[in-house]
Length: 277
Image (cartoon, rainbow, N blue to C red):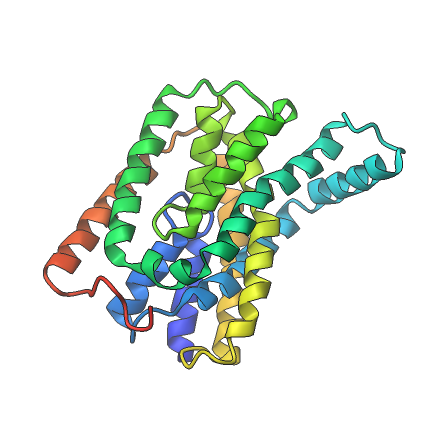
């Protein structure tokens, strides 16, 4: 991987990671369309360390408070019913599905799931789901009303993002809307819930970098830093946007991207199984 490819893919990762449009799908498409092929699951996971660091920075006060209250609940200094202590437990609970499935489906994540026809199906299918739940969402629940059941359902929705085209934010936000949470509340929890899973995945995939001929440390680090900077700006914008707007523009974009990708596959412009997948 050269510097130009890394910079472009880093920009793409930062722009799409938090939008409900699937960053992994964009990296798959761009990697094959403009470069030598699939950058690989390791590249995606490691550059997500950059975008997730942006989440940690943006929500630093909230995260610090949650961690402090959670530890306090372990020692008895804080009541276990405290909203922030409960949030800590719910984030742990919600992270279990993607952690377990990520380990058991590692081979499929690196191969079968990266088939671009699967990406087409996920882009279009999840678009319809987001549109339906957003259209009928009650938008009334706040995060202090989050229950154990809802925390687990959020986690299952996040686990679906192991398949490119689903979108981590799209899946979890759609789940939140379906359960009656406000758009901003659903997005905030989606961001917080992703922290353990993304860091575990990224750190786990670091071991694959030295043995992957497609990757080099310099370009990979550059892509990760770029993804961090752009991702931080996108978080600011998205949370302001969804406080007054619905998800229709993202639904339309996903459907258009799915259609364009299908045409590229049918015409042979792109291969369903990218080189290296």
